[in-house]
Image 1 (tube, helix red, strand yellow):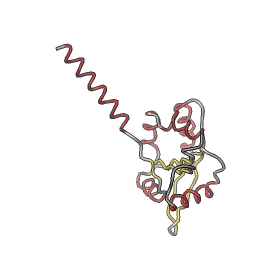
Image 2: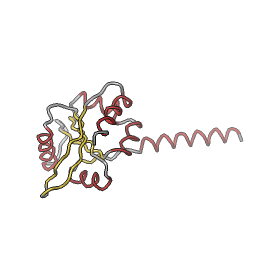
Image 3: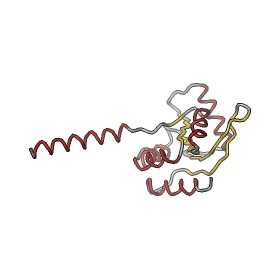
Image 4: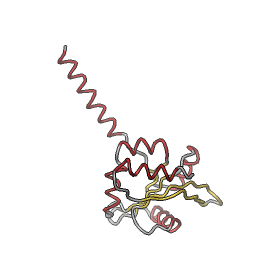
Length: 156
């Protein structure tokens, strides 16, 4: 009986770890869809400007913060996630390239990674953004990065 209990507990733990790993966050890539979700949920957008396949600091931010359980819990509660990628090797549709280039210009993005927090409304078929604040890579893992993000969101 004791051996069966150990096996049962082990199976539960293994299944639980798969559930946590399978619980991926939803990152929007279409800004119009993200605006719609943001307005319906009344959550600001987190716009992640990244060079996913070449930018070392972007990859580090992903690994140390954006792909952690702490960030996932925080993001689900606080923001709508939007990935605006500027890859060198990965192909993108012309529509996404045009959209991302326009957003890079609108927000004055000079370097990667840059994370903007913003809200938006559609006006005359075009998005009109209200920036809340921005950050980039912050040393110290999820606690340090999330503290900066929380301070920015307090401004909204």
